[in-house]
Image 1: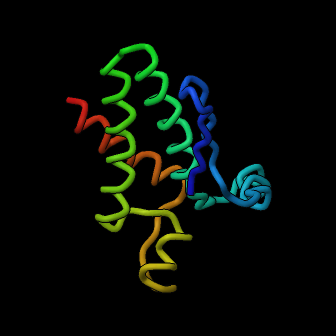
Image 2: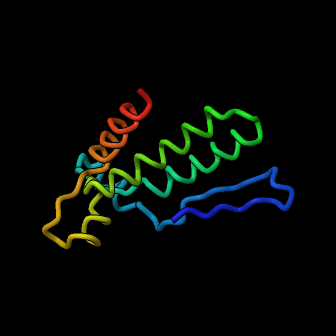
Length: 116
């Protein structure tokens, strides 16, 4: 989930990922262990900021890019490519899931394709 706050005049906007701590995942990562941290809320916080900046600057290419990044996130999950937290929710313990790096590679692959 991502929260978006905008001033009444619409010029200033804050977007943030509303998620809990990932300290345990970070410690596992530091120890060289594979982790499966869901980056979607953080990605959407950035894309919402990019889209707002694009509107303020009148740069449709920036708006389009932000929307494409969000689109590939949604499409990846809909195609069954997701991190462990989401996989457990939709498919239970036996459902396949991706590590953080694998999921980011999935998003990169999908974004490269949609941008071509």
